[in-house]
Image (cartoon, rainbow, N blue to C red):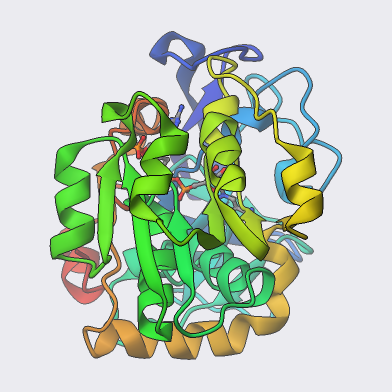
Length: 355
Ligand SMILES: NC(=O)c1ccc[n+]([C@@H]2O[C@H](COP(=O)([O-])OP(=O)(O)OC[C@H]3O[C@@H](n4cnc5c(N)ncnc54)[C@H](OP(=O)(O)O)[C@@H]3O)[C@@H](O)[C@H]2O)c1
C-alpha cells in the first residue's frame, strides 16, 4: 500500500503568554494513500496562519466552547486550519483525484479529511490559490460580513480600522472606500502606514506606536467623530475609539489581538458614553455570515480581477516555517494575509498559477 511521510506542526504543551518557537515541534507520521470510505486524502498546498489559533493553544479560553473551529488544540496532535489543497485519493463519490479543494486542512503536508469535516471543491476563477485562503477565505468573509452586516455602513460615514494593514483590516478598509466612506486606519510601522495611504487608497493612516495618547490621536484624525469602528485589536485602542464614537455609532468587534498574549491592558470602556451616544458594540464570527458567501465571493473576486481591491498575501514556505510565521503575527511582522505554502512538485507549481 502506498504511503507518504506527513510532516506536521504540533504544540508541545499548552501556551500561556506570547508564543515562542520552543513551544512547537515538527512531527512525522505515515499517511496511507488508500482512502477509506468517507475519507478524502488531501495534499495541502496553502494553509492559513491566524491569530485565533493562540486562543486554541491555551488551557482555558472563552473561545473554546463557542464554535467547532475554536475547540482546544491537543499537544502533540495536528492543528486544523483553513487551507487549499489537491485531492490525492478519495473514498467519497463527490471528490475525485487531482481536484482542487478548500476546507479544514491542517498545519502539515497532508490531511486526511473525514466525512463531516469542511471540504469544498474549488474553482480558482483565474485567481492564485493563495487568494482563496485569504481574501476569498475566512479572513475575507470576516471583513465582508463584519463591515456590511455588522457595521451597516452609510455612504459618507467615517470609518476607523485597526490592524489596518493585516489580512482582515486591509480588506475592510478597501470595502469601505469602494462603498463611499471616509476611511482611516492604524498600523504598527511607517511602511504599513505608507502602504495604506499610497497603495490601498485609505484617506489617512497613522502608526499607533508613535502616539502617546490614542484618544487625542483619534480626535486629530476624526475631528467630527467616528461612525464605524472595525476593531481587530481590543485593549486601549478600543477604549479610545469608543470614546470618539458619534451618536448611533457601530463597533464591530472582530478580534482583540492585543489581549491574546496577556501582555496588553484589557479594554475598560466608558459605558456612560456608550449609553448616551446609543453606540452598538457587536462581536461576530465570519462563520455567522456564510449566508452571504455567494455574494461575498462574486463581489470580491470581481474587485480583485478589475484591480479595484488588492489581496495582500504574506507567504512563508514549507511546514517548518509555520511556527515562526505564527509567532511573528503577534510582533506585527506580517503585511496582509499570513499563510504558508507547502512543498510542491514543479509540475504542480506551474499548473496551479501560484504567487
Ligand atoms: N471574528 C472572526 O471571525 C475573525 C476572523 C479572522 C480574524 N479575526 C480577528 O481579527 C483580527 C485580525 O486578524 P488577521 O488574521 O487579519 O490578523 P492580521 O491583522 O493580519 O495580523 C495581526 C496584526 O495585529 C497587529 N498586532 C499584533 N499585536 C498587536 C497588539 N498588541 N496591539 C495592536 N496590534 C497588534 C499586528 O499589526 P500592527 O503592525 O498593526 O501592530 C499584526 O500584524 C484578530 O484579532 C483576529 O483574531 C476574527
